[in-house]
Length: 227
Image 1 (tube, rainbow, N blue to C red):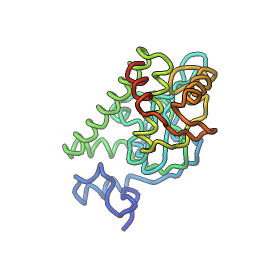
Image 2: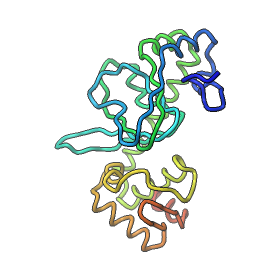
Image 3: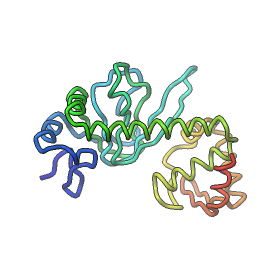
Image 4: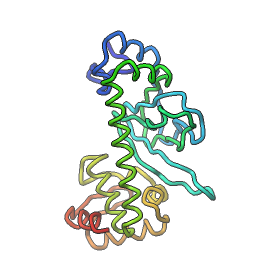
């Protein structure tokens, strides 16, 4: 029988495979599914953490507002991902906002029930800690690269990320507007537009509106690696 914590094939979502049936039902009863349209806010920066957010399907961005109203997009999440998982273990409010980039289905689980389950189930706790570690390492690498790389290297890294991690294809639609792409790479909208145009002129990519085709993975990889 399909529940909020089962995938489309009827099996449990992957992070709950280790749970006994009784424990699974406890989490199931503490969870509910919510649909978000593209552009809708899932949670806002500086609001209390009351739910564990599991992205069942869709695409979500997390962004942080800093001084002078400037916004930085920290990461993107695709289906079968936790969003904002490190906040589960703290007492502080959310450090950033989560916003649906495309229509998405989210499972929200009461944070207190989830914490109690981690105390009870060591395998689940280890899995959650592994995901937190992976997320933190990925974000640390991203910001380290931003400090070390010039803009062409950062844009190349972004395109590779979309190609290999998000869409698994050389051809894809950019999931973010030009302004958001700039927020994701730490530059201005004008510089982002200029760099994409240079990539197109040099036949590194094919660009038609939001549609991108990577024509030279060798060059993109070199730019991303050398910055």
